[in-house]
Amino acid sequence: MNDFFQQTAQREFQSAVRDLSSAKQFQAALNKSLNRYDKLIAKTIDEAATKPACRAGCAFCCYYKVEVRAHEVLNIRAYLDQHLARELREKILQEIAQNAAQIRNMTPEQQLTTNLKCPLLQDNQCSAYPVRPYRCRNFHATDASACEASFADPANMDISTGMVETLAIAADAHSQGFEAAIEHQGLDARVYDFTTALQEALTDEACVKRYLRGKKTFQQAIEVN
Image 1 (cartoon, rainbow, N blue to C red):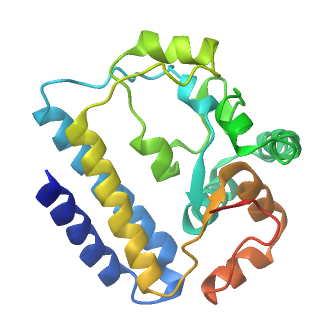
Image 2: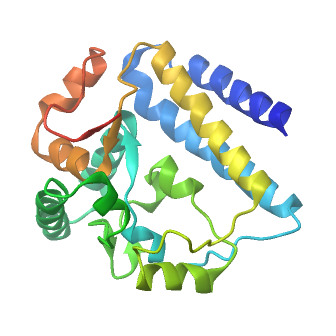
Image 3: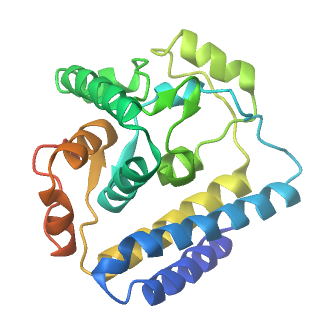
């Protein structure tokens, strides 16, 4: 299985490096990577004996803490600008600000054990689903009832929602392959808290310029060590 991880990560790294011939192509490169990811995951699920229990309309995982890379957040910002009506975008930005204020007053442990709805979750659907972060894509469960139990008791870290091992390995390998290509290109590969990074991306036009220059993209967002 370790060989499978290495091969999957290396294959994605090589594809992403070709797509990232310049920093300005990061968004197109990421979307190509997401397309490759979707095909890989569909194939892996088809071949797996156990299937994920995840279904449309099930959003318990959208209350979990999420960590992201700068390229993911900037890609989501571009998607929201292009696809969301102004009123909905403003509503989401207000929810982001409320969540960010709460997160900044929480310890890392409290963030892991507190339900906090993702601001992108509107009418029980993700407003940026096609460009959602790898962490969101990579999460899956084989026991939907356990997801509901974990939501009802977020402080209970002993609840196991189950996973498909080959799926988890394929997902992690692919995302790490792309992230390695980003770092190889000299772009920001830091890990950020999703909410505070998205807040900054939507309110600070200089974020993209810093990213393209290989600088730290988000100055105010929480950086995850």
